[in-house]
Length: 230
Length: 293
Image 1 (tube, each protein chain N blue to C red):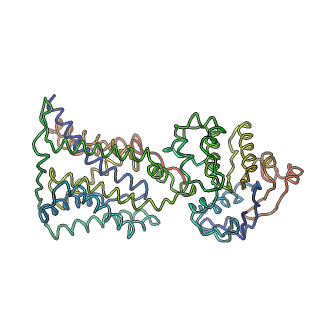
Image 2 (cartoon, one colour):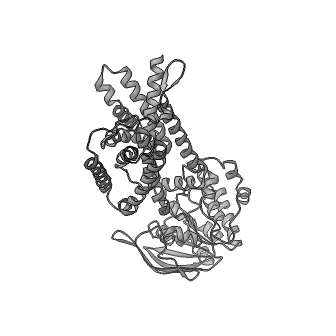
C-alpha cells in the first residue's frame, strides 16, 4: 500500500533521513522504533507532505504522492495523528471531528465516534485544548477515523498516557486494523508496539538499520531497550 | 448625565469605525500572517470613491455602499494574487515595505487627481435630522452607523462561529499547516479572505464620507489608532479586534471630554492604554501565543 524508496530529507544543511526505503502492506500495523533524533518523526512528516526539504519516492497504492501538497495527501487517504495531538483552541470537539473532509471508503459516522468515545461526547462543545491529554489523544485518533483515512500516520500516540489509556489506544488501533485500516506508528514503548504491530523497522541516524518481526522484538527486548536508551 | 451619554454615544460611533477596520485587519492577519499597512488607504478609497461616484456620476450613497466595498474587495483580491501572496516566504520587513508602499501609491494617485483639500459629502436625505432619545438628541446618521456596524460585526461573528466556512477560517488562522494535513486547501481561502477584509475597510470608508472630511490622507490619520486597537485586542483575534475597537472609541471620547484640560493625556490616551495592555498581556487582551505547526 505504502512504498517508500530512497527517501532523504534535510533540515537546512543537516541531513536527517538517508535513503530510507520501506514498504507497508494494506491492513498492516508497522512501527518505527529508534532513539530520539533517529528521524522517525521527520519520516512521518515527509510522508504527510509537511517537511519541505525532501527527495525520493513515496507511493500510495502505486500512485506517486511525493510531490503532492499536504491537503491532497490527506484526501488521498492519509490520516495525520501528530505528536502534539493537533488540538485547536478555537474549535470545539465536534468541529475537530467534522473539519476534515471524508476521504476513504469507510468514514465513521459521528454517532459511532461518540458511541466509542463517551468522554468526547460529554465534552463535545468544549474547546479541544481544554481536554485532558488522554482525551486529546483519543480525539486525534477519532478525527482520522471519522475522515475514513486508509493509512494512519501516528506519531507516539501513547506518549504521556496512563497505562489504562495506552491500552485504550491499543484497542482502538486493533479495531481500526480489523476494518482494513493500515497504520504506520512511531513508538518508543516496545511492549505496546509488539501488542499492536505486525512488524517493526529500527531507524538509526536517518537510516533503516533493521527490519524486525514481533518475535524478534520480544526475544531481543532487553538488548533493544538498552540500545534505545529507555 | 446627558453629556456623559452623548460622549458615550460618540465614542461608540468612532468605535464602530475602529471595529470594522480592525476586524478586517484581524481576519487578514489570521489567514495570511500579513499586517496590512495599506488598510487605511482602502478606507480612504471607499470614502473617496463614494464622493467621486456622487459628484461625477450622481450615484447615491446607498448604491455607493454596495459598489465601493465590492469593487475594493475585487481590487484587494487582484493585489493579493499579484503581489501580497509573495510575502509569505519573505522576511516580515518586506510586508511593511510592500503594504506601506501601496499606501503611498494609492494616496498619491488620489492626490494627483483631486488635490489634498477635503471634499464635502452630503448626508443622505433619508438619514438627515436627529433621533430623540428623551434626554438628548442624536444625529440620525450616527445612529445608523452604530446600528449598521454592530449588525455587521454580529453577522461576521455568526459566519465565523456557526458556519463551515467560519470553522475552516478559524482552523486555518490558528494552525495553517496542521489544517492542510487534514485535507483543507488553506491557500484557496486566502484570496477571498483578503478581499473580504479590504471590502470591510471600503465599507467603513463609505460610511465615513458624510461625517468625516473626505481627503487622500484620511486613512493615514486613522490607521495609527487602528493598529493600537489591533494590538490591544490581540493581533489576529477577531473578537478582540471588535471589542478593542469599541473600547478604544469610548476611551478616546471620554478622554477628550473629561481630560480636555490635559491635551497631552487626551491625545495620547490610546497609546498609553496600548502600552499598559502590552505590559500586562504581551499577546493582547484576547490574543494567544502562536502555537507551533
